[in-house]
Image 1: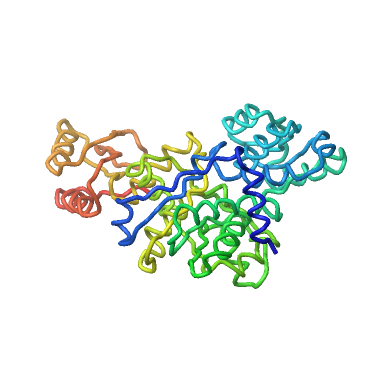
Image 2: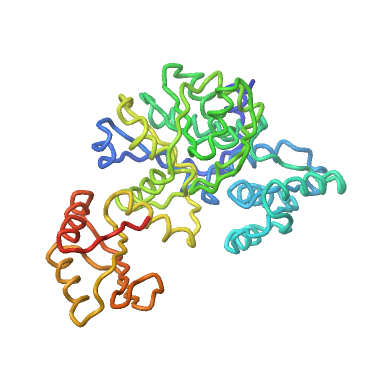
Length: 403
């Protein structure tokens, strides 16, 4: 098992390499959950996530002749960025295998961090299989994403910083992917403060740690679902990590996609920070999952801030929809002069701001003399939405909410 001594050694090793990230109190979110809430901002870490800690601690312990030969891994996300950055610091050639369809922005970011990039396979599993075989064929060192004590020790240095900055912590919420992050942090925290309650959080559609706890051992999920929390969407948690999770993690909870989106939007709007979906699960759990069970000083780990800009509009729209601040409607109306003006007058009276409107009279499924109208509206909450739908129905329309 990982020890506190290993984490202390990692902290010394990482001096001057990683940033001691900020711990910020959030008055707004504290009021929402009814207890003091803080954020540990690893989204502000070098490369935008915690991964540099474990990657550097692992690599720096390897013999120099092994590093001179080079390393290889498979990843299209934060693990690859952290590893490429650590390899640059240690003058180590780094090769990253990414699957087809990886966003160009991620590929360019890896290249900017000095990595050689190979595009292989239709998914991460195929890319990983290729990278492991490549390592065997060439003698390069293959680097795992999380399931190794040196990596967990590096991630555990976050726990040491939390103990230093918030010694009277009561509850800690941490995202779970492969399990290395929460394993290291939990080991560090529990070694000094065994009464701190540690809660692991997963996306509901990729809850491999929850499955492992139910089964008593790591078990692979049968399918892989798309989620806003892509960085923690793993089909099976690590064998080594599972041992630490069972020993130190008090509870594991899951959050839904709309809750992840709402948490991202909430932190953008009220905290002025951008976080990725994997980081948002901790706040989502605090706001919508375990809110009633939180007591005393609570901390959400924001594990990364590398949100894809191409994904941002979809995330924001989904979050606003879930919050009741955005409404998409479809309805049919008579196609005659003044009909559209009458509809917009009703919406104006209801104080619903029109973001976008589309008017189609040529849709084959419509009777002659009717047109379809698609509306994107800014709304003030769920009660306002009910008022809009009720008024439109009373006016003879049959509005359908578009999800």
